[in-house]
Image 1 (cartoon, rainbow over the protein chains, first blue to last red):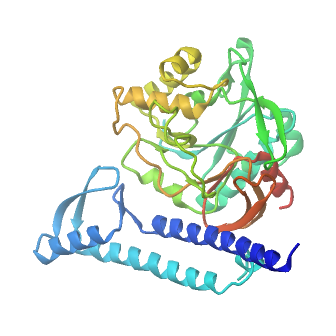
Image 2 (cartoon, rainbow over the protein chains, first blue to last red; image 1 turned 180 degrees about the vertical axis):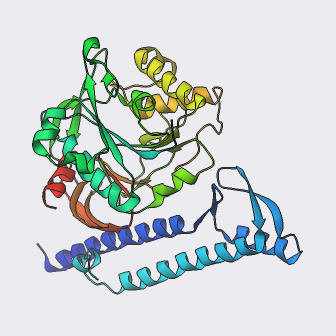
Image 3 (tube, helix red, strand yellow; image 1 turned 90 degrees about the horizontal axis):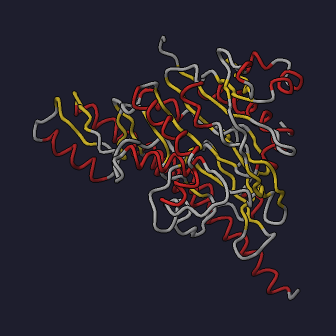
Length: 118
Length: 296
């Protein structure tokens, strides 16, 4: 095989594997930003954080009903604590995503991309 | 009945695939990651006892399937008919075998489960985290995946979205959580009814498949329970379930990490690798799963 083509195909294979791993990290991030509370399930989006923060700032911070991902109404007794927890959930997930992403993009071969230990 | 929680597995070997081996492996991981007891429903009790003399330490209860009414007693599953079909099981893109697909007893899960809250799982799942513990705290009594995440980035059209192009939403019977309630009893009885009248329901819901599929039967039952419309009888299971079809190959299981070879679409016989960690995996390639279990 032409050496130029062989090199290009090696790189192409590397890119496919890199994209596989990136996609998995994205999916894991989406999973990690889910906050489970009181039998309900909340995906922590910027919308949710802003909405809850607005309620807290306006002093509406006790016995608030929020609608979860399954459209089930969930009673939140202490909204201030809920806000703190969803922010923790979001940034914990984002930090993990960032750390794993940085590790990933430094790997320059298919073997390293799929290596367990690095 | 006192409140109890646990996992229920159906494991019925065919001539090539050892589902008992998968169930044993899954039960060990369920203990490790979920700290839950596992019960197994099987027609291979003698094989289980022979191959796994310590099975009593791994399985909470072994529930035998019996074929004769006279053998039916407490803690057995009586099956009146054996009506399984032949299905092609792939081992990567190049190899497939037509084998018995013995999937017709899952609708009995409600009746046979020894638990008040049950996580019903396929045996070809590799548990790698504790996400499913959240089921038992969930407000809803029936949870099932409507969406599962394909590790292969390929457009499968409506395959796992609807049970047919012009029909109703698809649900995965792979992992189901239910509590023993009257409503759930009605649901599982309905699944049995659908199964017994499978050809009729295939016609009604435009299903074009030669064999019975639990995913479809569960999807139809959910649709009916919702009043023949979209509704919220079934809520989503917590956490993600990743899946690979049997045209991909599970290469290695290393604690919470799984290395998988994903088929290259349009390049038959070629694969790209992916490593996933801390993610529950539904591995449809039973042959490669069993090879990985053997290497543990």
